[in-house]
Image (cartoon, rainbow, N blue to C red; front, side):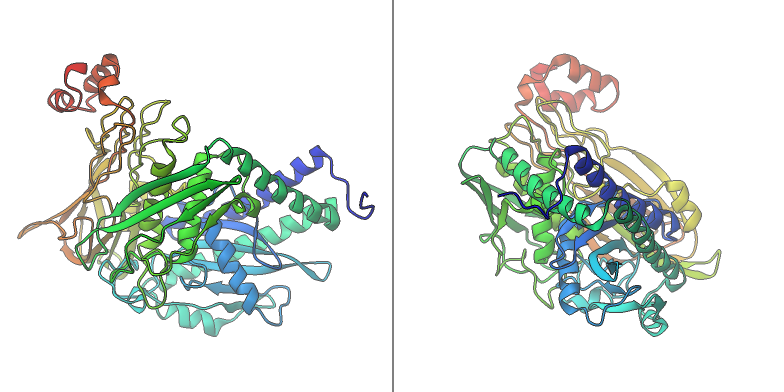
Length: 562
C-alpha cells in the first residue's frame, strides 16, 4: 500500500537536493577558510563543515572541501553534544574538543549549532577547525612525549559559547587565557562561527524553496541509497577473511613499534573489521580514540569506492568491533595528539593492505602515511610577540595497476595542503632554504611509488622550540604484490654544536633552536606496486633522465630491467 502522506520524489529533485545540501556545506567551508586568521585553516584548509541529524547526529552531508577524517568523528561528537544539550534556542552554539567524546586530538576544535526551522530543530550544523595551539606542554600541541592528555592542552567538554546568538565572553576568556596566540585565535573563532551562520542562511533558503517534507524525505532516501551503493561495491569482494599488519614507529616515549593487526571478514554483503589483536594502550601520544579509529576505516573505504556518495548510509555496511584493550581504543587519561594525523593513516594503510589482493584493480601500495606534523613556537623579535607555526607536508602515494604513484600528495586523511612557503616566511621568522622532490624515495615496482619532499628551513631571528609528531621513520610505506617499500621519514636539526637526530627518528619535542639553526625534513615516498622486474625499461630510463633516480640507485632497484 502506497503511503499517501509521503512526498513522491523524482530523480531530478533528489539529485538537486543532494547537490544542494552539499553546496550548503561547501559554502560553509569557504566562509570558514576565507575568514580565518590562521594559515593552517586559511591556506592549508585543515577544517570541515557538515549537516547532521537532529536526533542522533548521523551525517546528512559534508562539504567536498572538508577533511575526510572528520566525516566520522563529527558524527560522534555531534551525537554527544545532542545528548548533553539543554534549553536549546536559536543562536546557541556549542564548542567542544574533548577527544574521548567523539573527537580526534585537542587541536581539532568543534562547534555545533542546532538549526531551527519554523520553530523546530530540523538538524545540526557542525564544523571542525585545527587551532594552532590549545596550550599544553609545547607550542602547537604536538607533545611527542606526553603521558597524559592534560599535557597536550586545554580539554573542553560541550559548553555553550554562544547563547541565543550572544557570545559568552567569560567562556571565551577562559579559552583564550590558555592559548599562546590568543589574539589570532579570536579571529579563527569568529570565522568558525561565521561559517555556521552562512550554513544557517543557505539551508533555510533550500527549505523555503522545496519544503520541509520534501527535503526530509530526500535525506532519508539518500541515506538508503548510499547504503545500497556501498553494499553493491562491497559485492566485488569475495566472501572470506582478509588480514594485514601495519606498524607505528613508536609512541614517542617507549622506543618500540606499535602493531595494528587487522582482520576483515566479508559475509552476507557486509564487512566486519576486527583490530582486537593490536598492541595494548601505549604511554605516549599515539593512542587513538574510538571515533578516530572508526572514521579511519570509513575514509579508507571511501578511498577504495570514491563513487559512493557520503552520508550516514555509506557506513551502515561497515561493522567495527570496539578494540577495547588496545591503543586503538584510547580512554582517559591516555594522550592522543598523534591519533588523527598519524595513527589514523596507519589504520587506513592496514585496510588497504588487507584488501589489495581482493581488489588489485582498485587498490594501491601504501602512501606516505604521515602528515609530517611540525610545530615551532617561540619569540618573533621583529614584532616582539610570541608565535606558533604549525605545518604539515605531503609525501609519495603508492603505485597502482594504473600507474606510478603521485608525488608530494596530501595525507591519506585529508585534502589539506602545506601552506605556501611565502606565507610562512611572511608570517613567521623562518626562511626556507630548500623545498624539492625527494629523489629516489619512491618504492620500486612494476609501477613505482611517488616521491616525498625534502625541505629545510632556517631560523632567521629570535629563538624557538620545535616539536615533531611524524611516522614511517622506522618502516617505509608498504609495497604490495611484490613491490618494495618507500623511503622512510627523516628529521635532523643542524645547530652550532652539531647535528641532532631525534632518538625516536620521527618524534620529539622541545628541541631548542636559535637564529641560524636549520631544520631538515625528508618525507616518505610511496610503496611500489607489483614485481619490479616487470617494469618497462623505457619508464626506468625516463626516471633517470628526469633525475628521479640516479643511475646507481636504478641499477640497485631494477637491475637488468634498466
